[in-house]
Image 1 (cartoon, rainbow, N blue to C red):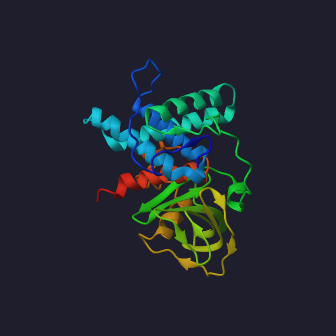
Image 2: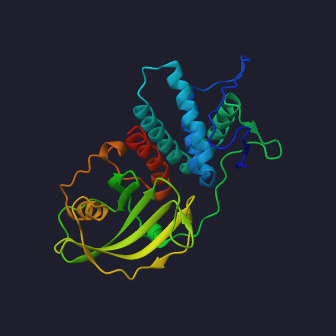
Image 3: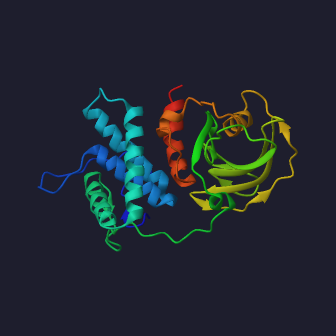
Length: 279
């Protein structure tokens, strides 16, 4: 059961607009899509269900305005959700406003409020155990994407190619949950040792996450390898070493890094669907 709300439809189902003409307040379909998307960020363990409702709200908007561009609408919903997430972190009246808006949208789209636990402001989740990659800091920049997933790299873009060997955290967001042999993950942080001059990369440490929660990290004993043009490692090496590198995907995030891997995971879900589902 979701924190504060119980779904009457299955997780990820298309919502049914259940609003009644009783004078109750209403929000637009896109406003509700933004609130559902943000709920998936607040409660990452229920992300799939909330994203299903967000997608359904977008579908209802497109049914009423068939000339709309779904990719542009999804990008706007994500941008609005990220902006509201920042306001939520600042506190003030925003948590209460989000509670009200989410309750309104729940009524409109047939999500049954949990009577045992009335819909409340998003709780401050207990501080999860932080991984090494999380404490390293730095926003996430897109390094490349494929049908298998999206790659990002932490930290600012280089002003010039660094000399010698240096360490950097990279992130992989697969399209489907993966298993590394003893645990599932939907996000993998990899500390890499990169040589811009030698054109090599070497993984040092693997740190898996599932639904935003840290798994068991493991060190790597792999040797350094030369990057092959067109490979994911080459994309990461280029993003780390070449200040002129342009992936062609920067417009998806407005040229700005994403603040953390949880936000990036949600964004990657939508971007990968936009990029590859219709191929």
